[in-house]
Image (cartoon, rainbow, N blue to C red; front, side, top):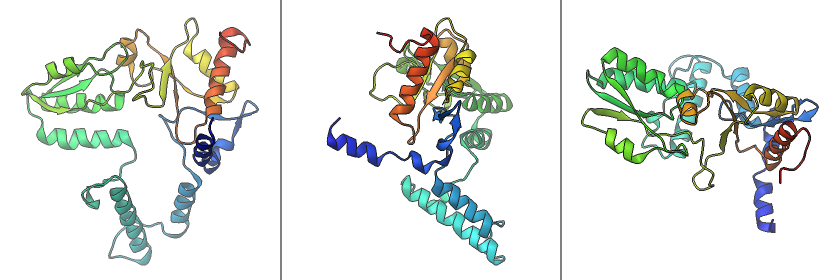
Length: 268
């Protein structure tokens, strides 16, 4: 590693900003690799939330009592900061929700309910998360629209040709987001890795890793159609965040080697 790359790595080492990462599980500092499901909050966020509840908590309103005005201003200041960060056209484009699942449900129920008509088509992919499947199925049932699915290739990427072929004059909403499972190249890869271990139950692997202080997800990952595309019903998933370290991934690798090879430290 060069001095420059080492310096960058040091600058990006923000684990100390996330207090929960100091937890020890199985006698070891936790290697948290389940950030796609739940990401952790840094101290600055924890402190800001605590400060709000300690000193400003009220139903936000610009024309009521002092606490209401303060909380309203804090909300609007946050809205403006987020709009600037993502380069939104205006701050009033920012709508706060409790998470991605609620946001998708709002789009499906509000936009879909108002715009879909009988015979219209909603084009998704077989790689969608369940949170992006059920809302569209529900609104399609209510409006008598049709949900169609574009396939993915062997690596889990969208089959662009199939997607184009399924676009039609009836298509009213297309969501081409894909959650990659199979690519083996770095280019364009997101730090989420789903896998199975031949001859081992995913729940056994997950439990054994947990005993070693390594936290990953196991099960159908709320993406059963995609898993079935790869010929499995369940899988393991390791997902990283800004606070994840090379050591975390190395511990996952070491844990898998120990479990599969019965303690061997090398796989050749």
